[in-house]
Amino acid sequence: MDASVVVVGAGPAGLMLAGELRLAGIDVVVLERHPRRTGESRGIGLTIGTMEVFDQRGLLRRLGPYETGGMGHFGGLPLDISVLGAAHEAARTVPQSVTEEALEAWAGELGADIRRGHEFLSYQDTGDGVTVTVRHDGGEERLRARYLVGCDGGRSVVRKAAGFDFPGTAATTEMLLADVRGVDLEPRMTGQQIGGGFVMVAKLAGGIHRIIVGEHGIPPQRRTGPPAFAEVADLWKRLTGGDVSHAEPVWVSAFGNATRQVTEYRRGRVLLAGDSAHVHLPAGGQGMNTSVQDAHNLGWKLAAVLRGDAPAELLDTYHSERHEVGRALLANTRAQSLLVLGGEEAQPLRDVLAELIQYPEVAHHLAAKVSGLDIRYDVGGGAGALLGRRLPHLPVNTTGGRRTSSTALLRTGRGVLLDLDDNAVLRRRAQPWRDRVDIVTATQDPGAGPSAGTTAVLLRPDGYVAWAAPGSHLNLDTALARWFGPGLGRRR
Image (cartoon, one colour):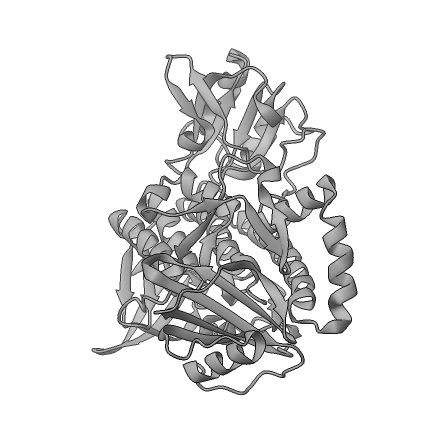
């Protein structure tokens, strides 16, 4: 084999997956057809869910300075995200280019083989692996691997080559986007309905403003490239009356409200992550953030299977968990599409929802949804509030007197059994999994939020609670075997 895994696409999903695999000791080749990073800002901002993921891997420091804030929006309606009381706020000024640079540096330092200027052409399933055909300056080359993962975007070549079904709806309208210099515009971070359309302005680093404009009822154009900046400036003037035609365009693009999702995230030895698996209106940057979290979910599972720790069936949970997340994502972005792109007929809906958001329960529900904090996986059932959810950042003191946190304990990418009750019997039961799970005895601060009253939690490498005491219907051994495979001395 040339590699255990070939990943196609060096965007956020592909690079996150490469880092996760290398953290677990799995060799990976990343193929990217572009010879160098584009530097395009693309998606801006990181949701709270992704901030937690990056903190778990020690990646936040790599992003450089960034602004955070407690305000977001749902379909252009202001939404107070601080009601979630999370340890992090959303990062508002991190362009995708910076995220990709940070992830590539991390994955590269861990030993990922990132090959730019290498275009995926086709693959063949050989039964025990895949053979991937690649084109580069030196001609064509074939690589043999155990698994192939498509992280190559909404027009995924891997998805098409593997025959994944990709049902959904085509775009009915489009919006124009431009990052510009040389103008001073009032920020409209949540957007504004004005002049028969929708406009949004975000201030980025380096004196750049992002402009997004869309006119109600205008069908999408068939484009072979990005729109001219003059088209953006004309639409801006038509909607706002302002003139930005003198600005310097840094990046110009167009996007629509097409909504599609593959019916399966895995077909044998081929898997999809990120926009390869789901496309939608990019409302609130949820697409890029969901893509990163797809990779975060897949990486440790694929590594466990490749190391022989867990059976291949563990990969089925990647589909069952992330397909449902993608389905919910498409539902909320379609709802936001109606609010943002709908004309006067949508105004009563906006008015009613604006009233509902004033209720704390509604605000909390929508804030959790757009922040990636409403996710709950099926880990076997039970009454515990933490089960199936990512454990919120939990400061603890180890028995050796060291101050640490649940977040820091996950930096190695291993599972963690956090014993909060100094339970020797529990620790002894977990010993057969000590090669994959760190067993940590610690105490938490009194009244420590949602974890109060919890005596132990089993954390998967992605930070989700697989078992908790009290509350889980499964015993600890069953939960450990389900997510980490048979313990030492129990393998056949």
